[in-house]
Structure formats: structure tokens, C-alpha cells
Amino acid sequence: MQSSFNDLINGNQLVLVDFFADWCGPCKMMSPILQEVKSVVKDQVKIIKINVDTNPELAAKFMVRGVPTLILFKNGNVLWRQSGVASKEDLVKLIMLNV
Image (cartoon, rainbow, N blue to C red; front, top):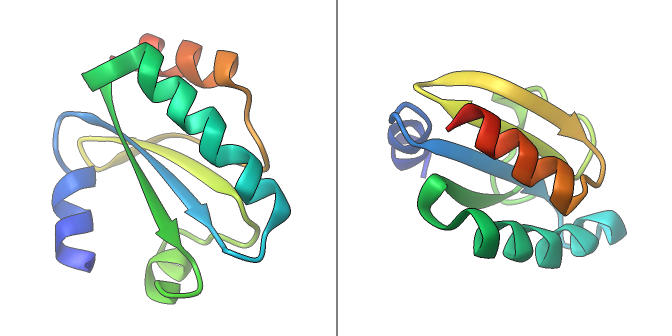
């Protein structure tokens, strides 16, 4: 998991990572929002979900203290991060600014 994750975030495509947990209410709210974002931005971004309970080493590596935490990567760099629910509009704007 870790090596394929590193390959993804080190590529030159934008990657939005959603660190979530199954027991987290706000995390459940993010799923439909992320689906809407994907339908708008299409292939401009790759969206992946990382369960912090099954991938604690990745959560620790990126200092994820609360869920949901969203992190936008390009070329291995963190362009943006936020804990908590983000709106579709804000995410679409953010992605289009960084394409």
C-alpha cells in the first residue's frame, strides 16, 4: 500500500487524499461531496481514500490527528490540507487553481 501510495502522490497529477474512518460521521458526509467534485473536475485530479484505522502508518506519516483530513498533493508536495468537511465548491476551486 505504502509504495503505490508514494508513487501516486509523487506523480505530476493532482491527488486529493481523504483520510477517513468508518466510525466518523463527518467522513460519511465527505463521500458524496467527493463524488460530486470528481464529476466536475473529471481527470484533473485523482481522489483516493485512506482509512486511518487500517493504515495507521500513513496517517502518522502525514500527522493526521483528526478525520476527515483532506490533503492535496502534486509532485510529492503538499499543496493544501484541511481537517473537517470541505464544500464541493471550495474543492473544485482549489483543484482548478492547481491543475
